[in-house]
Image (cartoon, rainbow, N blue to C red; front, side, top):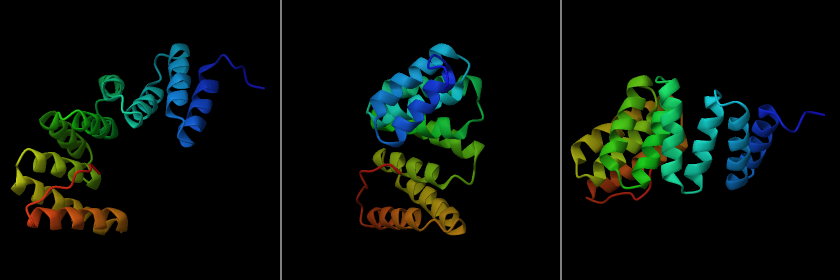
Length: 168
C-alpha cells in the first residue's frame, strides 16, 4: 500500500477526482501534492485546469503563470491561461496568450478558434475570420469533425454579423 503522505498518492487521487468532475476535491489533493513536491509543475497545471473548471479564474491564472515561469514553451499553459483571462473579460490579454500558444504550436487549431472569439468581442472581425479560416484548415487536416462544425458555425455567425458566446 502506498504511503498516503506522498505527492504521488495525492496526484493519483486528485486525477481520479478530476476525471469524475470532483474539481474542488481534486484541487485539494493537487494542493497537498504541491506541498510535498513544490517543483512539480504538472500538478500545478492540473490544479489550474480544475480551478478554471470551478470558475476560479484568478487562481487558475496564477497556476498557469507558475507553469509558464518554469516551462515557457508550454503552449497549453498559455492557451488555458488565455481561456481563464477571457472568462474574466480580459480579451486583449487573452489574445496575447492565444497568440503565444500559436507561436509555440502553430498547428493548435483550438487556439486560433479562441483567439478568433476574443477578436470578435473586441470588434476585430477581419482578424477573427482569418483565425477561423486557419483553424478550419488545421481541423480539416486533423479530421477533427467536432472542431470543424464549431468553426463552420462561427464563420456563419460572423457572416451574419453575430457573435458566438462560447470559447473553444
